[in-house]
Length: 288
Ligand SMILES: NC(=O)c1ccc[n+]([C@@H]2O[C@H](COP(=O)([O-])OP(=O)(O)OC[C@H]3O[C@@H](n4cnc5c(N)ncnc54)[C@H](O)[C@@H]3O)[C@@H](O)[C@H]2O)c1
Image (cartoon, rainbow, N blue to C red; front, top):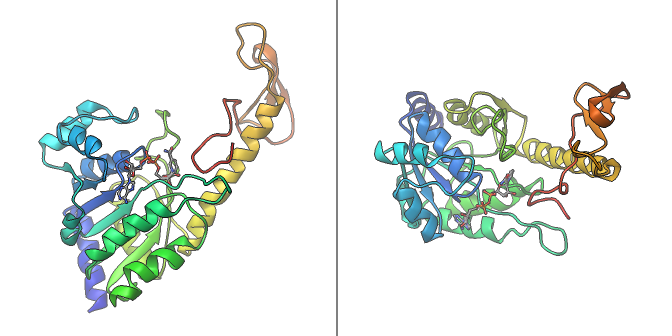
């Protein structure tokens, strides 16, 4: 029976006729909803913010990375709709959670949005559902927080009755060369069956999906990537001195392992990853 549930779900993803819900229609959730809708899935965005829901249903975007033209086209085609009503989850096959995890003053992530989203979702959990957490969080969250609330407390066996994975959002907002569609998607399931179902779902819409061994490995990959970025941008910002001329920043490192001086002169140096100076390391999950 469990093998059958998995195969039914995978088949729906192959045929692009699974019903997909996105919890949290912000900077991460809306572009993801658009990618799934453009791949042909029927997508419902769920968000308690009634203003965003009204704008979406009118075909208007409020996110710079998504055009109003795109939203309007998908809404008109019936591929994308939005609601504040969580009860639609009872009819969904697949749910991505893209709610905020801002840092508290103490430096740890505020988990209240994840908790409230999964409390809502738990009311409508049913067999044959796949849930993927996208919010940035600490390694262990998917297994320690989502698994008990969505599975064990509901009497649903993960990897058999339903499927659970973590897949971090890695998009760099504002970039045109790497978007939600072509940024390689890292994902890891709680069981091998969870990974298989997640790969089938995300792989049906996103150009490259890279499955890792476990949900924890995917969570750790995100933490490592954010830490790497923060240390490197912090380092380059320490070195950067505003130029007196029109050159912008005086010091920068480039992707070919060279450090550039003023006016584009570049010198061989130790291996360096391309990092540009900016207003701060930034990001919701980075301390200031
Ligand atoms: N924005 C980025 O560039 C970026 C990049 C990588 C990772 N992330 C991570 O992705 C997650 C989402 O970030 P974002 O920038 O999209 O945040 P956001 O604030 O733009 O959007 C989050 C949305 O979730 C909604 N929400 C709040 N509680 C909810 C609930 N219980 N159920 C459903 N929706 C709810 C909010 O109303 C809001 O519309 C965060 O964990 C963030 O750290 C963001």
